[in-house]
Length: 327
Image 1 (tube, rainbow, N blue to C red):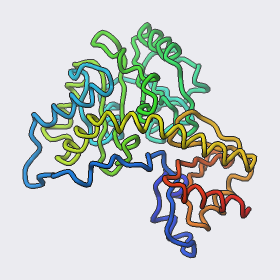
Image 2 (spheres, helix red, strand yellow):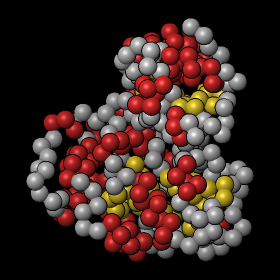
Image 3 (cartoon, one colour):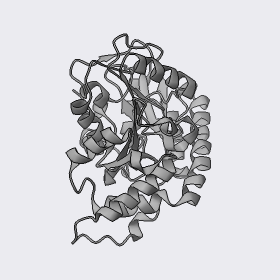
Image 4 (cartoon, one colour):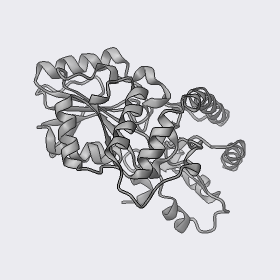
């Protein structure tokens, strides 16, 4: 398999394949916010001590306030990928997942199968796993549709699991407020994508207290690092920065849409951190951009698709414009 089609962020592989490309590279292959939360560099992290439980609980309280839920329903994870994979050990199958979506979703549960469409409902209960906003197409599912899925799943003694990794930009789409001990609803949230610090490896599960407790037991006493605790707590409490990003990112996404429009490229999705374009020239555009040291995300299962993240600066957007123009 071509590593560049497996997931975004394969910058070392791209540099090796396109060694003649002019540095510096611009990595647009992920949906990570190019404007990272600015306080991380000035944080004083004590690397000599194990993380304190009270500090971990402070992090979970800060995150819970951001999500709009009671902290008893929230547990920190060393990235949502780990939490999702642990879930496969805790919940019974069968499982269905939305498609297209993250590759991880297809790997969590043995014998899991993709849905034919987002409107399909499993007939046997089990687990229904959806992403909202979806990745890679950025499609958003409205709350009424998701709650209808939840009602049907519960009627069949099944669970609805929602991966809200990209939900921070539009909190109105989250179902976090509907999590309760008497509901079969689980939500995963990512820290690194919206706050632009994916290397921190921090995420959260939001769910009934009993299942959250099982996750805590599996992860042990120190589920996340001291750096993740300190940076995550401070970032979730930075309401001014969060509010600024919720205005800035959609404006930058609109500028990216306008750029694509000028080249006759149709972009899809509402998630402001990335766009998916569909064209018969997707492969050629990928090669053209890579030759100019701009990495985007192609897909082995749909060669007409190309996912492109937000350029972080005006200069980066101008470089993208020039590279597209040279086709």
